[in-house]
Length: 245
Image (tube, rainbow, N blue to C red; front, top):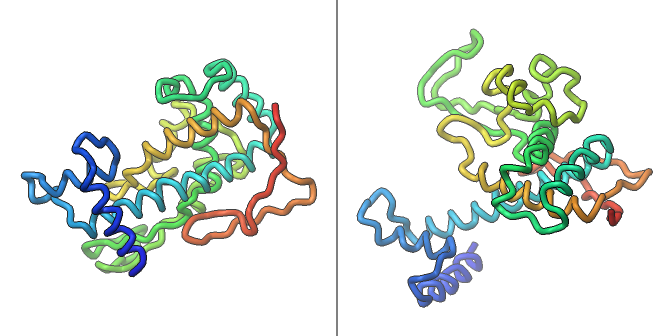
């Protein structure tokens, strides 16, 4: 961490020396140090922590989400074909932009179903502030509770034939028919991940742009095993053959 702190201090000096017109996230966080609201002011260390969180959650988790999505698409050619139909119709060969997100509806369902089966954050730990009771079992204040999207999102009560990859599970009427917390890859309540919108936009733009040009394929002899580390990733990686469409 000493090296991380030293490097950050150097970057902090460089950023402060730039013009006030800079519109990057780093500059916006530095602006909070001059906020009139004391609750919004950030120390240098808090700014560093925010940036590290952004890179860890905003990029590592998105990379894991897309990795599992390519894996599932390779195993489900009918879904892949529908995805190709949408991205070809909406984009027509160009790079996806934020303006396209409202049209990339099936692309969004594909990512949601991928997150259901292989949530990058496969388990979260929460602690109650006060003693309570859950399903008839006492839960003391401060107890650590594991909330596992990996298990809940594969429950056949909410998702019939739960291991089948079916993006239509996220049609609006299907979502309304399920309990609120039958699906929570980004957590829920006050601790719901604030990066959810970024992950959705980032994932859809990348998936749509790449799916126009490429169709990754698994090797016939390849075995894929999930590795539940900090994020859920394939053990030994996921080498694929990149086929041009």
